[in-house]
Length: 130
Length: 172
Image (cartoon, rainbow over all chains, first blue to last red; front, side, top):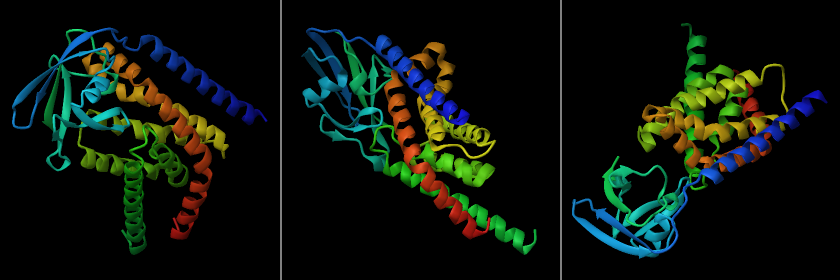
């Protein structure tokens, strides 16, 4: 009986901690800027050729914009959208390639669909190897 | 080492390699499901059945993960996260059999803290880098928590009986 009570207490404590963490995430999540924004996306291909795409958008997150503009294709993975193809070029697993997302040269901390975009942002999608 | 000792040691090596390979294959099979993974459950059951031998299985699994996915920063965190989980299970199992709900709560707690544990190497970039990494990943930790809780609640008992039976047949 005492053991059962302890177990139920552990489950209840887990639920409380989970709810607290949800609250922390909700109130500190990056806020996207709404309204018309101009965003530049630079694509650097495997042959090092670069192309710039300028978009005017109301999208809140980068992944949403890139998919809507059909600049990228990808699949939903454990960490959200995983970009596999950019501007028609697909990252080859056999060549250990992947598309690296950076903002002004600094790697983003989250996947494309949770990177908020603001007016004047400059992103780079670079074919990289691991 | 006498012949029996050699045979026992050989069996142990083969068994650890087999269980680590099974964990890797199952982890890859479930990879499309976001943050729902079998490794927490398997480390739990392996620890309950094989005790401290689980550390051989874990380090083989971690090595395989590095060979499959590459030796990146997350791989460093695997070196302490999974042994830590096995250590906690070894501590919790003291004092006799525990109800499945308790193991489910423990697995859920581990899933919930996974992001925070993975964030530790990011402390090298300062506390804010680690904190922002952890907070950004909280939704994934919540899914991890739920997945671990229900997988453990439903499968811990049957898997334990299966592996304990297999261990008995192997004479270990």
